[in-house]
Length: 104
Image (cartoon, rainbow, N blue to C red; front, side, top):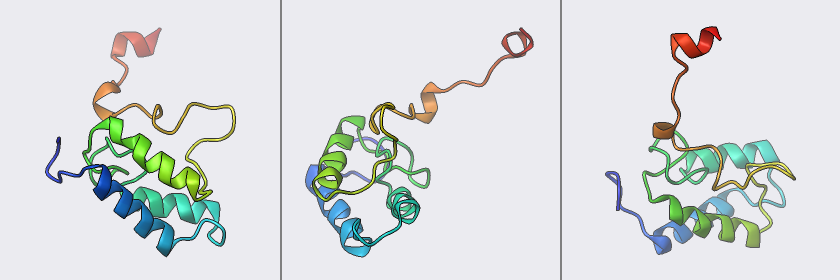
């Protein structure tokens, strides 16, 4: 596992169920649910703790996505856009524009 908080698929399922228990999708505003998901580290599990993730392997995002989909929870994406596990890219893969590329 990566990061300081090792977590496996069973741990993610438990964390996801806790989120669903605390914020039932049928009665929770979409934005409130997505904020709670972010705060729980379940938005993008491969992101760092505190930035919507748990420092977990990216492949484990499918565990969270499956649990949330089965519960009818709102997604982090809108219809027709990239899947939640594909976007956004991990922070380490994003780079700031350089002066030369920003000027062009």
